[in-house]
Length: 177
Image 1 (cartoon, one colour):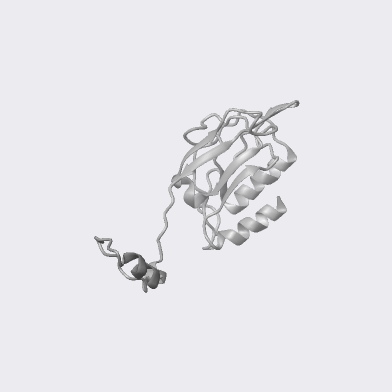
Image 2 (tube, rainbow, N blue to C red):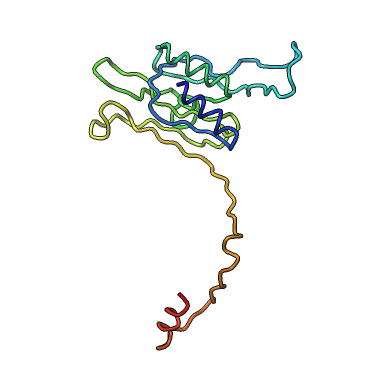
């Protein structure tokens, strides 16, 4: 988890961060943000960002282990939020792992606060033994905003809206290439 936190810190400087997969951490329903966070009572640095007050998450797995506590601490300190049990498709926090010990939630989608509203859907699929040894497939849908940089295409010739193929067209096409 220390390496994951270092990566979060590095990549947050470059943009939004998503973590998805098996983190072998059981987090129960423990809050992953500071409830009622504010600057009203203490003078804080101007750079301090107050945690968004979002709805709590649900989790069918009621166990909290040491690794889960560490993951929650990473989420709080880096303003990352667990999506499981918090959005359309998984309002109850379904189990993600089934093995001879029982079931648990150890696979997560975790996102930084700035993109929470862009995650439209999160789903834990039914367990299929042919898909994995013990983990369920998890999937999500996100709104992606991007801008294409067209400057690298400025030197291309505009294609005609219509083209009539002739006997010489094959030769002209080869020459153009």
